[in-house]
Image 1 (cartoon, rainbow, N blue to C red):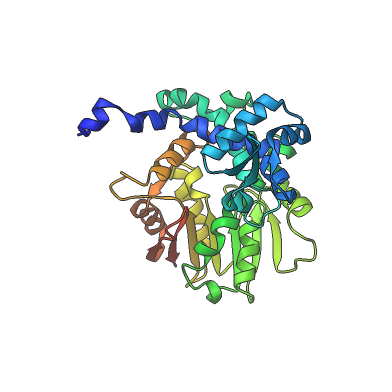
Image 2: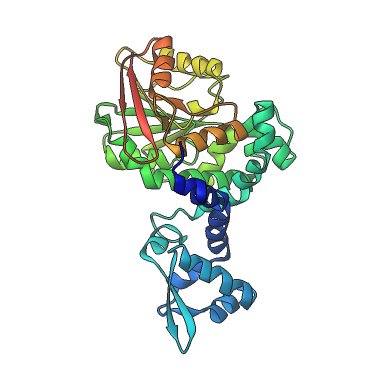
Length: 346
């Protein structure tokens, strides 16, 4: 039951109402290059100077910068009644393109792709199916045909995935001792960001990235250095084709894309490819067992409704998928961040 204060003035509801205004303000500052410009500058800059450099109106930029200061994304100092802006440490670290921990591409993917899909959430809830085709006018047999509708869109998505693994890859790959597995297969490994993290953490390991042909070709062209001999590629469709032999199969943000039937089909194929003692590692965003929280997991499950055929699941649901196809000794470990991991052995 709500408190009397909430009923007198619904502060929380008003904050929720403005949630997309907050995110769009941050996305716009990223897209225009505000944080990058301020990082390059050795001194704080006025709104007029920033507007001139970035090709915007002075009035519009002044309002954007003031809003960013209110959101603690920028700091300002007054000189002769004029505000001069600089980045906060948080913005320099995560919102600039050049930072090794940059989330810039995550912000752009949310702004330019996910934001458009979420206009159709009402339709997704009513119909119980994804809205990617409606949002982008791309009829397709598979959600990934729509997602990879052009090389530009593919690169955008791969940069987005890179951002997540830059932030959390080490955390999920060190939940379990993976040094026992010299031959690793990253199914649906996309740009190879998690594979690169894996070989940096486990020097004796080699990783095969298994993905669709055009994904592999784009990864090799834009993301993986040709002289990286511990990362290999194999082209294929893991629903239609056989998967490579490996000691460890990593499925990172793969199972949540698909229906239970398709998940079981894929996991059974992985189980059959495993030798005795072979292992599978699922990396996912977990719902609490009572499905009440975390809020981010719930929102991501709605996002899966909008963009894929799948959903986010509880650790028990992932464990059941694994045990149904034969995996045993299921272990679940959490990072306290975005992604967690479930390990199963044959």
